[in-house]
Length: 304
Figure 1 (cartoon, rainbow, N blue to C red):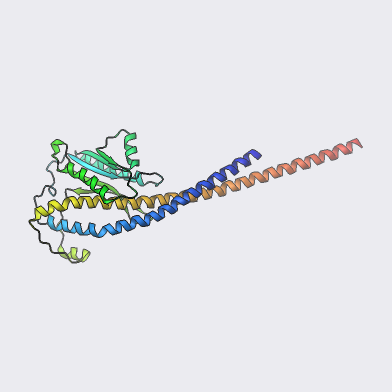
Figure 2 (tube, one colour):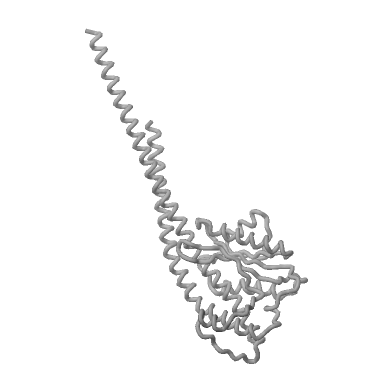
């Protein structure tokens, strides 16, 4: 019984130590969420305005190669944003599931998929299963910078401009995690190239986004679009990296909070079991003492 009690006490100590670690990680993640949110909010106005500018230029250009879909697209690039570190709940798993769903859909459409991976966890997942990766990046998923987005954008744009027969791609998709709230994040897939130009009523658009700016293009709309589109793609990737970083921290915070709560509940259970074991040990000791006293009394009575 004493050995069992020692086991309980040892497990209680180790569980308390683990709870301290998960609690510290929860607080660190909570602090980093705020910084990541601020970075995403700071990048949002530029992302919104460059999107409006590209939309305005695209409305005046009809046959630009970056706007025109291939008649028979045969190859697509999919950029997947995961994490460098674990202990983030289902963050990476959800992004990979969404990427696999998108890949299956593109394959059904007869398109070959080239996967580009961001994040050590996603890279490890694909390498362990011996799945090919066209390119990969790691080491910055928690604090992405614009330079990282430019590096990724350059690799993707090079493939998009390249002829399909020479190994180029007809479409570029991105799988990232949308930050909805501190407790809700959602993996999503979107196509960034070719651009999808939709006809929208200007009155409806003004009601949603405010007055539309008036643009004059020098030397021409096509030349301006050539300069804007790479910046637009880089900004889309940068904003996705920032939003995914905030989602990663939020997911890690939720996972660590759940781990801390589970550890505290386990400590309560182990403490109760240890108390029961201690009570059983005390009861056994009392029984042995009483039994010994009864035996001595009986022996004394017999000798008389």
